[in-house]
View 1 (cartoon, helix red, strand yellow):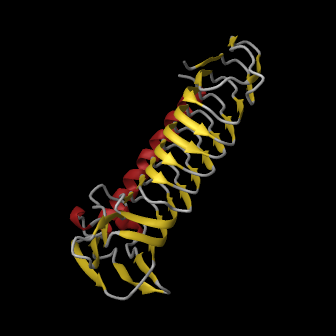
View 2: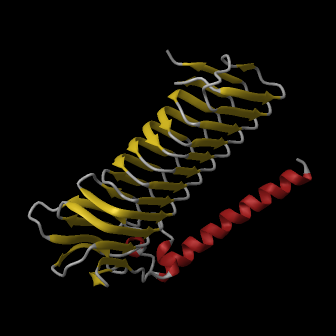
View 3: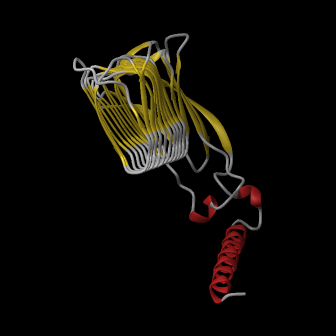
Length: 321
């Protein structure tokens, strides 16, 4: 056994031992009753809101947040919460405000027995001025029946699903969660993700900007102005994506695939990713690759620029019939 391997095994054993010690301390703190770990007793509380408001603000830590249509026209909020993870609901500065507190001790968070808080917000159908929502690990779901003039959602590991409406601006930021935005007529759209997949479909929008690290970016049936997509290892898959402005796509190892797409001008940069697919109209092509193969149509002097730069990737573009 080599010296380096012995060191690695020693570190691993040390981490296992440290985890066992923390688990023992957490159990000891609650009298070795595993059922007391986590948030403790859970119950559902319902809040009815009668004061007028025009927007919604949500700040929670672990709760999943789902918006639903109110069938009877009343505004109510259902919170499935732990006794040490309470929520407050009310109208503050003209906004329906939901705040989640976390009163657990550190050792109460070290558990595999923890339940997940959930919040359901029932709103009468219509458009509200704004949605501002922050959560750490909770999922967020906004259906077509509840729409907002502007949307800003921030989450760490939670998934985000946003549908419908005609927001003037949409901003979604997540670390490892997936993002789905669909069936909307929107203004500017900005989505930042690290490892989560980003899916945009059935969307008419202004400028669209997507920044992702390792997650895949897939866009289907989208019309927009300018388009900007940047990834490291995630693939970029575009189907029926048509832009009236310029499109810029940058990847490191991710592939770029087109299926009947178009834009005024294209600028595409990859390191090892392939660039291939079909465009709706001809372009003036400029392509470079150190070791990859390049296969492009004849130049169309009536078209915009199509610039591709890759290190080892292949480039293969055709014009759709």
